[in-house]
Length: 153
Image (cartoon, rainbow, N blue to C red; front, side, top):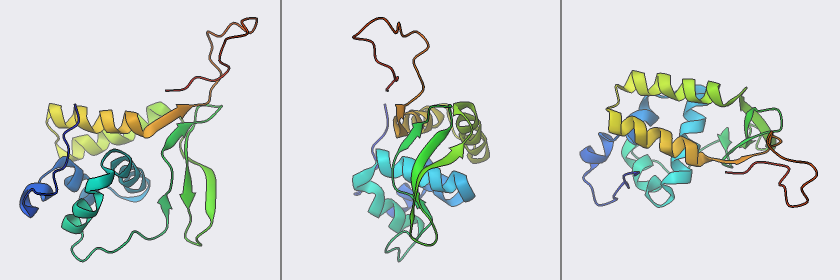
């Protein structure tokens, strides 16, 4: 079960959550993905979380991910991204496969020295963030008219 970030928590309590510590520690692509993962899972609490982590926070700036993650037909993890120029980059490749995504977040969890329950929460959030799998279903029987061609979470 994912713990909900309660906006009524004191600032130092929020700053001590794995979510806040992750935003401080993550960099580059990992930061972009973590920000999107947190926004997808904690939509209502994000303004409070961002204000605690970045006092005076008003708005995120490009580049940032504007959709949840998906696995494309060849197995890459992709999302739509707003680039520095403000243009939407559709199906922007973030990781070559799900293993690379898992390993990136495993390294982040190690760097943060997350407890077991925090690791589980992080990976449940990452798993929820990947909302679709567009690879062909290898178990599909093409003769079955009710078969789904794509797998979906």
